[in-house]
Length: 285
Image: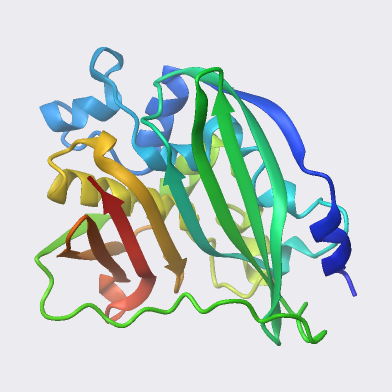
């Protein structure tokens, strides 16, 4: 079996230094569609170094996202075909606002291995701290098709009841044809998002958008629409990747206000609102 759950869970954590600059933050923001209109004061907070603040989802790529999803696939006990790998879900907990530039220590380990029958799910946990203390904790759920069925723990269900009533706000965000090519410059060079032949081998007609790009686009929409553009109000952000997005499509983002949290659902508008992000919660102050 390519995944040895006991060996993966027992492996020593991997630690390394990561660093980022204002340029990395700006590139990430552009990669998730910031800067339109280019002279809008609200957009300049994401693109102009003199006004820059950091969208918390930047944590998923800071220091090129290492250790991250790809790193997790090289941990002891894990030997899988990248073409069978999909990002199943993501949870990000923010301990304090992210600085526009910095150096920190990232420590990654396999926190859980679940047997879903036809697939395995690896939970790759990355904890990041700098000289002042913890910055963020990232849990990436890595879905590996064809690697389940050994009789292991199925793990908890992340499915939530549908939000009640009509959404409080609905916005649409266009995904550029070259969005995946721009986003991958922040560090995720998985060929699934750029190489048509690799995408076909993975079962897709053409390259798909990074799930974490949709994740970032969605958080920006929530911050801009419900949180008055204040990135420091985000406490945590959890989602399940329910479907793919193709570059050139339009994301329909529905939001429901709650006490200290917003529920969100994202769909592909041109494909009869096919689900893209589900079971999504942004906790905030």
